[in-house]
Length: 130
Image (cartoon, rainbow, N blue to C red; front, side, top):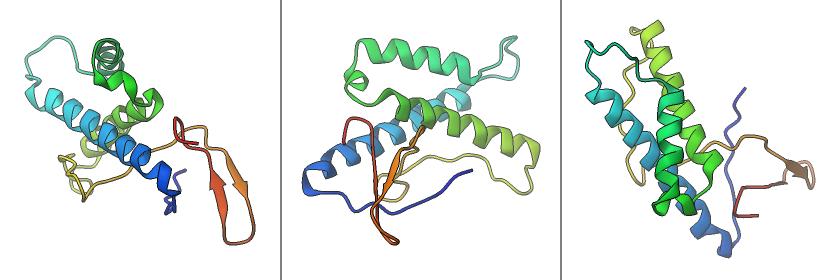
């Protein structure tokens, strides 16, 4: 089950949240590019596990290692789910497309911990942000 909520971050947390959005968008677009270049005749399928392993290797020696690993891995899971939905019902779900800065901003948080402050407000813990 997925719940989409609007965040009202403090000033010092805004840069970290925008970095999470940028990392998730970059990983999604990179995974989409890999899948677009995959050729039908290959004997091995391009799966989430293969892409997650490549992401782990890329995080070791690049700027991606500074970001949050669960958020980047979840972007690959979301891409994999989008392709499975498209293959299952192509008339209902469109082919996954590129995410654009300023338009498709967002990321998924697994193992969400929420502290309810009152009926209307709550606090959410975001990795590497607080």
